[in-house]
Amino acid sequence: MRRATSGYNSAAEKSILTFPAGFLPDYAIAFDKDFAAIFELVNGGPVSFNYVGSGNLTPLGTATAPVYNFTATKAQMGVSSGSTFKFLGAYIAISAFRSNEFIGDVGPAANPGFTDYTATTFNTYVGGVLPLQFSNFALKKSAGNAVQLSWKTSLEQNVSHFEILRSANGVSFTSIASVSARNTAIDNLYTVTDLTPAKANNYYKIVMIDKDGSKKISEILKMNLSSDAAEMLAYQNGNAVKVNVSNLDRGSYAVRLSNAQGQQVYSGTILHNGGNTSHTLNIKTTLLPSVYHVILINNSSRLSSSFIVQ
Image (cartoon, rainbow, N blue to C red; front, top):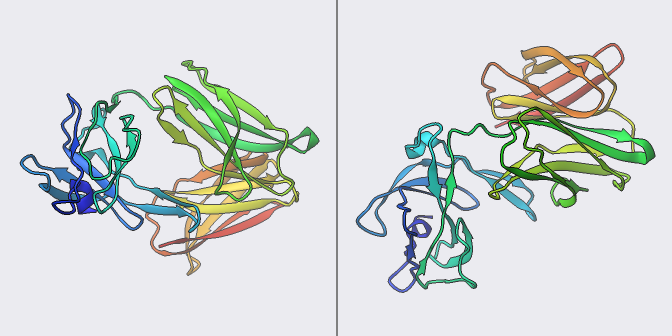
């Protein structure tokens, strides 16, 4: 990882990257399948950099279709909240062999490998602009065994469009529709109907694409058209717990969260509007490593789901 960050593996295996005018790199984030790290770049030499901290890598997906997320706070890189900053991404192996894939620069036609390359452009993150707010993503069955997707947005600004993606396994997704953004100051409610869903499991997510190409991805919701039985899936999402329900009747439900020792760590009420949607439990305390059980109950229904915090 350190060799990839510096671009040097040996005297023969090196790929020097010259940055574009107006771009002086201060920090680098490097990651592989096991770890992500943040480095402070120091002027004075190609291998002069200091380790700052972890990039909080989270492997997702499966062995055949891996997905990796990493996060870094602005404070780790000396960027204050709301600040504008420039960034450039390049793909490079631990051997210092560089790919022609770049973020913020078009890159050469072929892999430069160990040949020096000069980037000419970079991307700019504009601070101080409130981000697009995405909420109320829900699914419900409609006439003809179709699936209706709905979602709500606010603070739309410079949004290009929304891509609606569907999957049969929750891993490999394909686009089934595209909806242009309205970019209005008021809240916007969007609906799309999938007329050709599978007769079994259907997983949906929405990709919100800005005009500059940046993306924001929704959570994944599931609709099973082979059964009308109500289902629930609970999982940890940062400091909260997400509860995804499907085929559940409209109503008020008591919700309880307990650990493996049977100790209740959360209780509350969910107002469910029917169909398939997601609810957030805002847990006030940190969830310690354990197996947790969620129960959703009212006079006519009882659902349960478990998840592990490691």
